[in-house]
Structure formats: C-alpha cells, structure tokens
Amino acid sequence: MVGVTITKHENGPSGEYRAHVADSDVIGHLTWAERDGVHYAEHTLVPPAIGGRGVAGRLVEAMVADARENGFKIGPVCSYVVAAFERHPEWADVEA
Image 1 (cartoon, rainbow, N blue to C red):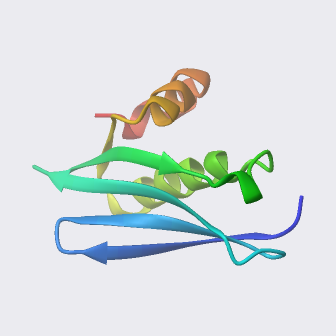
Image 2: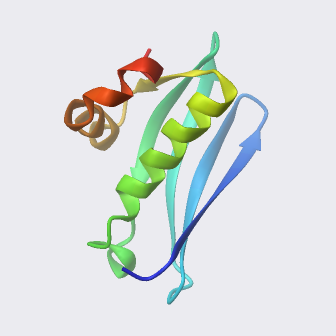
C-alpha cells in the first residue's frame, strides 16, 4: 500500500478525518458530529480513485486512536463504521 496520511479537521461540534493518499490528489473522508461527549461517525466516503487500498479502515482506526487519546466515545452511525466495530471487538472501550 502507498502511504496514507490521516488529518483531523474540526469545525465546532463537528468535523472530519481526511485521508491523503501519496500518489493521488483525491481525498477520503470520515465525518462526525459531537453530541453530549459522543462523536457520532456519520459518513465514510472513499472515492473509487483511491478505493481498495484500506483507506476507509485507516480512517476508522484514526478515529479510534483519537478517541482513546482524547477520552471520547464513538457512536457508529455510518454502515461502514458499524461493520468495522463488529469486526474489532477490541474497540469496545471507545464505543458509545
């Protein structure tokens, strides 16, 4: 896999994680909104140009790491994030 860099962008009580793939200008996104201390993962979008490289998984992993580091819970809403939490029971500590 080529390099993937994840960045976090906040805009008040919402934000997104962005995946920048080394060999592309296309960006993947995982958007979230915060309510009552829970960050609800609402939508994951990985355009076809960078699909099939594990980008969506890296976005969710970044959110999980951020939750552990900053002490918030994640509310999986997006179907991809729901499925990722089902595949990773070790993330139960950050699931709302």
